[in-house]
Amino acid sequence: MSDVTTPPLRWRLGVAMAEKDIRTARELRRRLREVGYEISEPQLSRLRKRLPRQLDTSLLVALCRVLAVQPGQLLVLPAERASDGPPPAASEPRDNKNTEQAGPISVDSNDMATTKSHPISGPKLRAIPMPRL
Picture 1 (cartoon, rainbow, N blue to C red):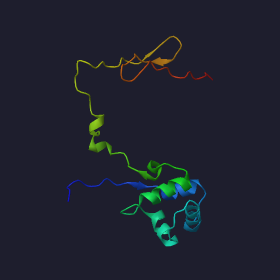
Picture 2 (spheres, rainbow, N blue to C red):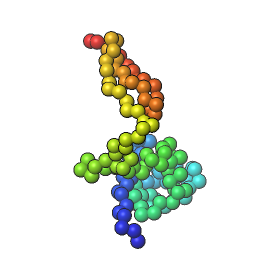
Picture 3 (cartoon, helix red, strand yellow):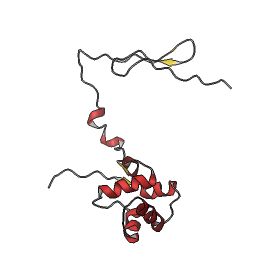
Picture 4 (spheres, rainbow, N blue to C red):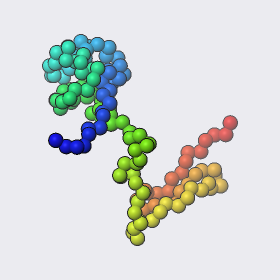
């Protein structure tokens, strides 16, 4: 076995059901049957309350079809706590001769924030002007 602990996933089936006005496991079961997936009502009731240890991909696909969502909307990996530090991909970039740093944000005469162009991030950005009240 591995020493790495599995990060907790948030299971949002109940939220997705509520957004589609599906109030019971019976109603969800009926809709799953319509897309060709058979499952018992007690299984759905348990599934609604908590994420199973193993999740059949055909069930996940059927749930996504019925609820009109993507898998990432049902299974959410919570953000890491600030005390844990940033994830490796978000760490500071190393000094590299081939990279340029983006310039500071400035305000031009039209009161729109702009930044200098960066070869990786794309063209200059301009904020949408807000009407003054």
